Image (cartoon, rainbow, N blue to C red; front, top):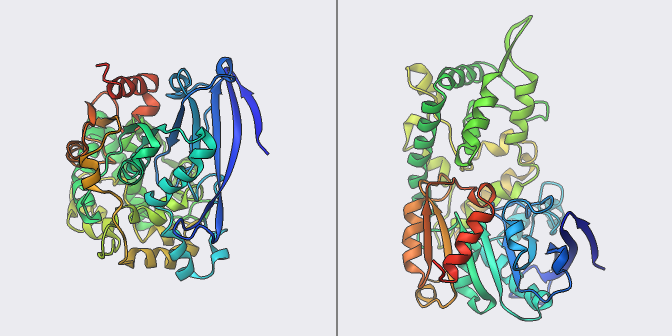
Length: 433
């Protein structure tokens, strides 16, 4: 049964679909997908084309908008929008520490999670498209990892697409995870350097917090073990439009005076645990490196191994000298499964995924080279999350793709820039500029 309700200017409808867990075994086990249909209230009765939104991540459900926020207000001028919770996220048969034990032990859980990459997500989209559109192709807007899924869509089922729009999400077509992270750490360092140039007072603040964590055992109220590596990982914020400012405000009131001496304040700890916890998106940690799996080489905790090639990120060495502490970015590490209560029960499952050697390619360069679907992509200059050089190389490999390279926005430009970003991409795809 579908349920419809209203927000200002919009009519929203909850949609649920049943799809195979393994699309190669359509008569086998099934899972449920959830999506929210959104249409402008004054166009609710019209026969509009469809736009499917694929969220970034992996591991995040589709954005829960309130009214015509960000790009959605522009989209509903032309489209009926479907906000899909990709499998395992949001309300789509969630995969987490509470549900995964239903699969069995770590080996069974790891096997299950191999079906939560872009290839399965694309096949989900194709399975539900006939029911949603009556068989007509739709426009897809892919943000970040959603863009990775969009390129996989172009590789495997371009007949399902009318137009493809990508924001900050053109993946490297042939890179191993090690290549991705070797490109990532210098970008992260540049973002940290820029942050300290903006807020020079944060150099000493970050060093003081790091020194405290190296010399004290700190457990956050949620049970999260707050190590110096965990503190450094808060640098993931620096890839967003407001991230540098948010990090600055987090650092400025980190300590309070207590009877036992300076201590990390309750307010700081409360904010930190909200930023560090993977309770709401555990798939991000579990399959983040698996999205780069493409052959018999294991990912083998790539971000952790490659970090050793960049000793400037070693907090103890930085504090032993007079170097600023470097934050890290969009990287997943084994220690996260020791520190985070939401991930601890899944440590062995994560180890098995990291050791896996049977990954299959997600993209088809030959098919992309003869692409006929109109494609437009926003590529953000020096994007912290997705390497700009990798993205531009992929853009050249997809026939007909038009790029908008900009430093006006960071990785979250589709949120921060909203209607302007979507309007620009639609104009490029329609060959109007």
